[in-house]
Length: 141
Length: 423
Image (cartoon, rainbow over all chains, first blue to last red):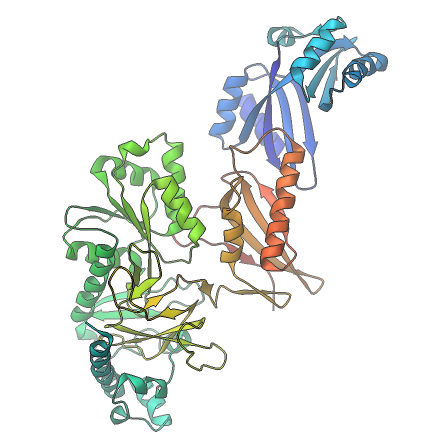
């Protein structure tokens, strides 16, 4: 049910993000969603890609520090109220969202969520008939 | 041999040494004459405090061969120091010196448990540096199978370790850690290796670093001490008690002095280690100031040896940084790092001066296994590390987490400090 996200530790050094993407590009890996969280000193690049295992292997080969994390992906309209609705469902159940990022398309939006309790979150979203995405779904979009 | 007998031998050898330098080294003759001293004034080892000190700059001033006490025709080997703190210093050995060196290194290796059935992989650099050849001659002397692979080329080191069945590894402690990492990265299982002990030296290392090497490589890690000016490795070595390093004091007489007043300090005091060579012919040295800080313990060791023990070196007075007036040794930083499993003990200290104020930065690698997807976790780590460091060193320090394997690995002496201050 859940989607595996790649997290990459990055020093704040110019060109480092480009290097990650070049490495992935050399293996023809496609990116479905991407976000960068940064602090003054370092950042974490988060990615949903077409071939997670291959991406991880090739990044490790290039000495990047990579971690795999389970995240939830929900499809919703790109209206703010729908995003708000999802977050409200979770907060009502005291499920906290560690981070979230979204990729809007023309009408729809793919929302990625990392929750304090992913399983509980999935159940709650299903109960509210939200459209949860599986790995295969993502690459058809 | 009890200590009285040893003192007799030391006295006799000191008299010979003083005579040798007085008649053969103009530099020493002048220094002694300035003080109104001649060979007749030195009757026993107790008279050593009358003699002048020798420093590295004396050797530089007489570069390259000015302090040799024999004609060059008697010199069979020349080495030079790495010149980490300036112009290199050159040392020469007679045939008898090479034999002394082999003897003291044989003692060192025997103390590490090495014998004729061992395979000693020498991953110290060969060449002008004394590490490689010093270990080499000691290994041959005890009849072990010596593998002179020299430093670097980690892949080949691993291959040899596997194929030849290396039992004793000799290298710098930082390279030992690097090799441990490489063993893991290459999927080599510990059961495939026959390693049992390692002799590590040429740079100061902490007890924590020893623990880490022993755990990762599953070996006994023995500290060895030496400096090229005195002879090279083989000046002092640890026994299995890990309770200080036994000094080969029938060849090298040790004193501890206050580096500022130059007074000899009472037994057990922390101060600068000073050596007088007692048997060397090529380059005899009188009261050579090592810049290494340690203490001496004359109690008999539980291993049975009566040789004086020096404490594991805390650091060199040369390595000591003065940051905003506070003394800082890189080994203090290292101790804190090794206590935290979330980071690798690969680090770099960067000192700079901004608006007349010294700044201190530590760059340290995040352990790959520790890295998860959370910013807060990394920030906590950074904060904790910073707090631990600040309370250990008494100085503000900026901590920067860097990507694993980005800090340059050393295959010789680790370069831990970058001081960008201009004085």
